[in-house]
Image (spheres, rainbow, N blue to C red):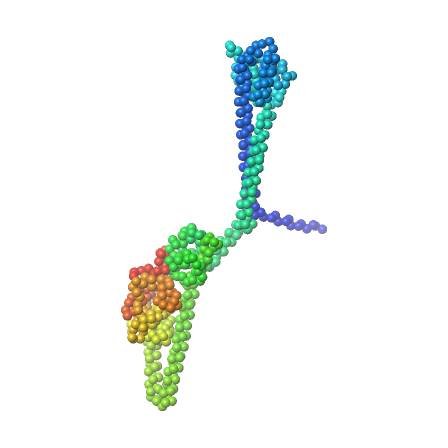
Length: 561
């Protein structure tokens, strides 16, 4: 029966902080050890040089002494020189002082039994009148020694003097500095290891104990996630510079080129959008407009002053659908108002019949029917586009419910099939619906200053190769000083605070997206005219001027794409 091979246990993956700790400890230990070795070698070399200078000075002093010169010429040099040499040796701290004849036979030595024996070392250069040093192993062991000549009055070599310090004595002198050096090295290693441990402990907390491969994979997952989500994401540092901008944010904000490390207020974004991002308070689901999109903005701070997270959602399609739903709602409300009004008129007709006034009942019913049918026939005959016709009928009924008369000018005419396929019906609803709503509000607000009934006049016709939509009201009009701000997000004429300031901004954005223009004029009240091209080539837009995304560019009183 074959034995089943057990899988080998998986080796634990050392964290990045752990690996760095090991590497740093090895580096610190190597640096400290290398420094200690170099310091020891330097100290040993300096000590040996000092020893050479010391023995050279002692040997020359002895050789130049007159008493030594006299003793070497006497009958018994050892008797005179041995006590003298030992005294000098003790006083100077050298290991030995040997005085010898020119044959190398010792007259003095620290060990008396060595007197009379031949000196161990080189004496040739001393016999030639030179002083040299060497390291040689003699009777006391290895030593650093100097041999120098003793000269008589005629400068002849009559004797030799050697002084030396054993290597053991030099090592003893190095023992103290070496111990201090080892202590400093150990302390440096301990401090370096402790500092490395503390630094890597902090790194381990920040990296959550993950290894390099795990961090690399996490970064790849992070990048893939950020660039695959459909929401725009922008990260800012504490100086409001862009740290990260994913693909969705670039598309939503129409950003091109390198944006990282650039302040967000230098990217040419709309002023209102930049102000909302840089505001002190977090933003929650705030609607912002760019040149071609409606965005929902959210912001939140990172930590305590580390930066800010900005998320963006595309609300353009939803805003268009909302406009369509509002139109449907207005149609429903208009139908309800008409049903209510029809019920009142029906009660009046029934009452006239019950009173026996049949002719008056027929006359009243016929007149009301003709009045209602007149507007319907006028709209249907002039506007062949069903979406616009339905919108105008619904807005007319809604305006009548609020006491405003909505009329269609005699020159209004749009035949069916005139509008190009790329001019979306929702864009027409956005433009005309918001213009009429704003005009009705303005007409009602200005009714207090006029004795006649508030009116809104609509013109919808083909003007050359453009679709012209013009809405005029009998309100107070637009202040000439506010013309530049009319199409800015947040601008509103409502005084009750219920306005969001999006209607005219959406009109300008839709007109610009379709290559059209918006003009502001004045007659009895405000007059707003939108021109949309009926036959326009595919847009090949140059890079947008971001400084005016929230203010539609153009001449004063006009908005152009």
